[in-house]
Length: 444
Image (cartoon, rainbow, N blue to C red; front, side):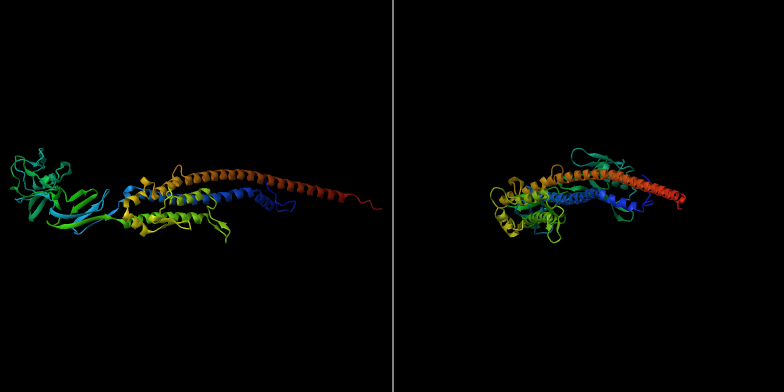
């Protein structure tokens, strides 16, 4: 950079003059920087909008699935008999009477022993027979009661049993062994290796299956206390303490309330998105300011497409199902009309919303996907395009930085040259003045 001699000879504030000239020179760059700020605010607004559209897509896709249109609520008249519903559950009523509950197979051995007493006979190995044709020999290590309990409970032995040493007196314990699972098929026998009884033999509580009577000659059994898919999509579970003979009325009915709430949720999210678009696109006549997305064709097109999704496109209307467009350009939902229509024809109403019938939820999902898709969405493309434009503007700003730096250097050199020239002329003027003053006077 050239040395600047500000006003040394001319008396001018050349530094200030250069700064003011550079402000004029930088006006195009300032406009570019302003455009970058504006474009960045638009990108931020589009990203926020895109996130909301993606959430709308997720909710509408869920409601467009047929599985979403078979919600049911299940009740049982007795607390010890619970009911759970799953996919495929439909309205039904059952009268359930408990005739048995599932229990583990349990053996309580008769003789007490200390934990350190050897209880396995002449060998430290015992025989476990699950009556499946493949008895297992368990190595207890030292043959003590503690070693036997550890061998039965060792996960690596995979006995399917759990054992406890129950303290019946100081230093005296009795062995209790039971199957982990319930059911009549869980029986077992535990003996010494040679087949002799352990600890004086044991008292057996045989494992049992759970059983219920549904009336009309229909009974059902289960190795556990849960009857999975007793009726398609409906499972019933008995509490382990359920009394034999307990009867419960089990009812499964369509849950119109929760379904109406799901539709209301979709409509509310759709209206919130429309409101956001309107706010971002509005022009305030009072403040003379336009919204960040005012004039954006992609956003205008999205709003129109969302409202168009209300209409089936076949000349019919969703008004009979409680959905219609208001004069304000929002979507209105009448829960009473919807509930009445669904009660009268649940299958037909479901088809008007789901993918199979190109229904309302499916149409909204398609519009939302078209806008928010990560690779081909219109909002995604708009964001990508504006980011590319911002990059180009920033490149131009950097070009202007270099251009302005050269311009400032030129101006500083020019003003320095001016000051130097004026200083030289001043010196010459002073010299000439001195020379003229030294000339002899010619007065006579």
